[in-house]
Image 1: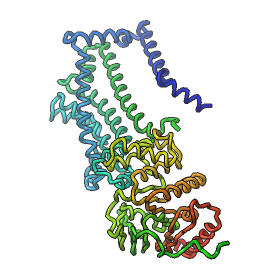
Image 2 (image 1 turned 135 degrees about the vertical axis):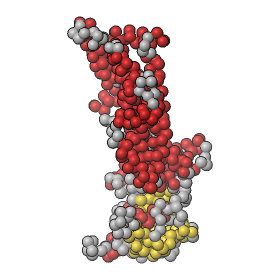
Image 3 (image 1 turned 90 degrees about the vertical axis):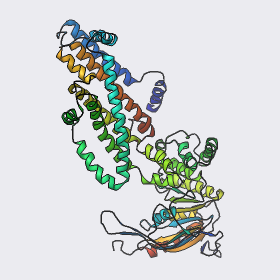
Image 4 (image 1 turned 180 degrees about the horizontal axis):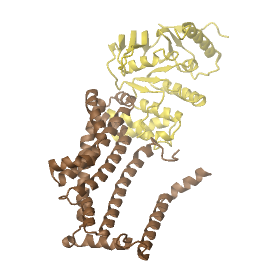
Amino acid sequence: MSGAASMAGHARGRWRPSRNICIGAASVGTVLLLWQTMSSLGVVPTVLLPGPVTLARQAVVLAGQGGAVPFQLEHDITLTMVRLLGGFACAVALAVPLGVISALWPPAGKLLQPVFAVLMAVPAIAIVPILMLITGIGNATDVTVVIFTAFVPIAVYVHEGVKLVDRRYYWTARSFGTRPVDVFRHILLPGIAVPLIAGLRMGMGYAWRSLIATESLTALSGGLGYSIFQAAQFFDTRTIYLYMVVIALLGFGIEALFRHAERRTAIRWGVIASGGSQ
Amino acid sequence: MDGSVTPVQETGLAAGPIVVEARNLRKVFTPQDGNPPVVAVEDVSFQIRRGEFTVLLGPSGCGKSTTLYMIGGFEKVSGGELMLHGKPVAGPGPDRGIVFQDFVLFPWRTVLGNIMFGLEMMRRFDRAEIRARAEHYVQHLGLAGFENAYPSTLSGGMKQRIAIARTLATEPEFMLMDEPFAALDAQTRDRLIADLSRIAGEQNTTFVFVTHDVREAIRLADRIIVFSPRPSRVVQSIQVTLPRPRDSYDPRLLEIDRELRSLIGRHAPDDPAS
């Protein structure tokens, strides 16, 4: 009975948004409605709590005006995303090979594991002061913070992931005469896909939070984190709220990408529970 | 009733040439953490002949799986000799396929993807040829309709069929099987034994099959190599000439079963703790 019902639900899911998305949209809609009502009724002064409609207007103003207003939303989004993605790409390029090597080659593991452990314990914001002295209060500090914060979880998850690959996968591959390059591509990479995605997700989450915080401290850099603090200087609450919403939406979008990657791998393969796939 | 012909015979009358020969084979594991070395295989000698379904039979801890892994080239030989076609085994090779007790399927590949794996890695066939060969073994192992499923959604019996198909698909000279049916329920095991016995008859492959199950051994084997535990040695190598398909309740099979059990019983350690 329940099997038939869930199958029908699955079939409908191809062309109708799932129940979870409907519930999520309804709850966000309710919050927006309450927010607008409170703002419109003047429960809280509109200066401290501008409504969603005001923010939408503000978004149009900031997005459309080019250089005519002090805050340029598009420009800030571009700056922040370029730093985030550029730094993240560097972190991946460093962390994945180091994680693999430290797991496969014991001397490297002995050398690198304590380094990972120490780095794991350092909050990113604690390295900002020295970075500002070394690299200045511009782009370089922001990007370095992204690389630093994303590197550690990716390297650690890759290291653990490689260690957990069943050695009999390699045996099986070698018993088919598999070449080393194919072992890497067809055994090692898919074998660590699940922890790799978990590490990327965590690294991206850390990097995103640290970048916004660091941007607020690096006065030459611009970007979302810089502008939201600048707006506070001008008591420009509409811009502050707008940037908060933009930061939240971007963060949500990034998370959604990783959730999608998890659905395509771990959940599809049945490696971790999806909440009722059996 | 036909007591004149005993279905159990000593070695020496066999058909094919010797393809694997172990002489005083020994395997010692030295743990990394400084614990004392563990002797897994003490002193083992046997011969495997081409095309014979050879079963390595013995209780757990007798070193039969380790012996299989040495034939596969996955574990290094510590002492004695292990010859494959007259040369010492040097690492794994595509001539020796392996099937494990717990399947070791690639969870990131579908059923068909798993079966195509070895064919893809050989880099000898084009895509269409690989697919056609894999499809053949899908049919052969009774996996039709499940080609696009992921292994995690299937039962243990189905998983082991996938693993067998994956290994058979590349048509290796040897099929090495490490207690492949030990994790399955009785009915599933029964059907898989029957299917494997049929497949082995059709295939030009030398099977080396590890088990602790006497009945399973007799239903499948042309030859049974009996191991004793601690010290692990080969007690006897016997030939089974019962016609196939074999029925578990055939009195001749039960007769061999009784002989084997008494043989293993004689070599069991009196005090397992000693």
